[in-house]
Length: 245
Image 1 (spheres, rainbow, N blue to C red):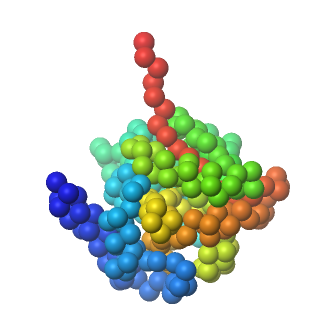
Image 2 (tube, helix red, strand yellow):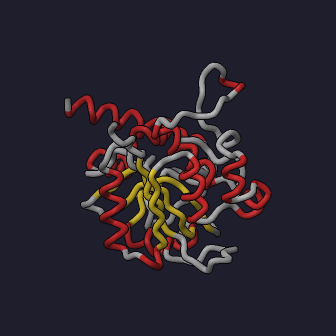
Image 3 (cartoon, rainbow, N blue to C red):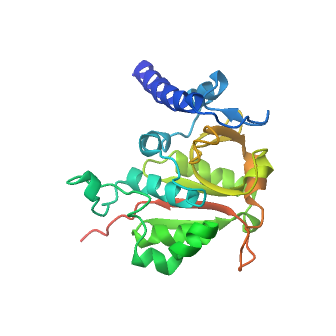
């Protein structure tokens, strides 16, 4: 059983690695570890919290434009949760969330598409759009949290089936190029104290392992533009359990 598990993990990791290797992604700083590397694959195989990795890797997709990192992250998580999706004529009779059909009149009340296309979305808007689809959401601004609290909560979520974490962070704070970004986390390795980010700008960076303290510092930055003057942070997502009759 353990051998089959390792083989499956290796297979999925290698498929993601091959996709990254086939693209002309930007170079990584020494502080980040690519999943496409031997060390990155080893971290995945040895990670203690990786329940989220399986479903997220199946539905991982690339953001369709520079402002849609939040939209792509939400779509991946909703598909992984198995939430009933809107009709998709191009895939009829099958249904799944896409970066087009996930936005509707209800999400428009959270953040208008015209604003989203111009500047992306904030941490609270990520939570607001997810709530439209009836999932349990907990939004945590890094300025109101701590690195220890983040590590504990994110690790617990990644180790629990059906629970997910989306992070909003400043790329330059972890040695990548430029501004704010949003992507889901997929795993946590305790020995190295690193989280695996499944980067939705797959044309730019591969999935990477980042040190917990570095990631928290990158989240503990001010979002721009941000009328509420609040920090970036992380969102915990879980399915809503229907009450027993």
